[in-house]
Image (tube, rainbow, N blue to C red):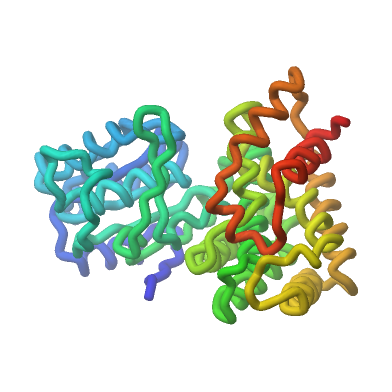
Length: 372
């Protein structure tokens, strides 16, 4: 069970937590954004106050490379660190997860080619966006020779997470919107995934309701709403930890890399089009539980969104995407469509409850990009 802490003004709960671990040296994985946060001062003074030395590691990019993780593992060992803390968004958390996983493996061989053996090194996380839910999942993404590598192990889930609403105050508005929609898409996609369970559906429902209840206040930077959105993202992360994501995410990754839009922006555009398509094509259901089960699930989503029908639920989702001004990117040529439709991760398509052919995927991309 993941331990959740909520930040107070002076972070007394963090002092108590670190003292309880008995650690004397922390590897702090963080990007440059920590310099804008109150937490930066906290970690700067930790050695003076509690005699706990902090070794910082920031040698990674937004799409972190395998080599960065290798450097992080080396630093962890060379400095004799005892605990890994991470302050950041999805990329930072993914790096910290992999450092933990690889820290007890053979450094003379490629970590990606070795079997992961769980270890008891403590991983503590402070998510600085309310979106990825990475702090609640067993997944991490790094890049090796330019290729995306998905790393999976229950052992990489942080044992303790701190929700600090103040970290969201400095986020640019576009990032606040995009990360929120990433969490929303996680919850929606997990709900209809072929891997859904009663537990995952409860997480999805709770996350959806929290997001819908707090959108306006969160965008206005209300502290309570910020706290609720951090909670919603974490709960949505717990949902996809069970189910994984589906076609919306499978289709959004290349949109992000090809056009330079935020991940949550791309995911929202994809689910905005995918949702009504699946409602209209429920007869193409590939969930072994059957078409009626899928229709019942759609009805549950409608209930979670406080909509009178699933069609209205899809319209409500689309209305939020439009209200956030998430415009589709502009394609340069037909080559973009070809690149997009051949980029889709087929594994994630298997999680989708409605079958999607290559022709359908092309049509969906044309609808997303608003081109004929």
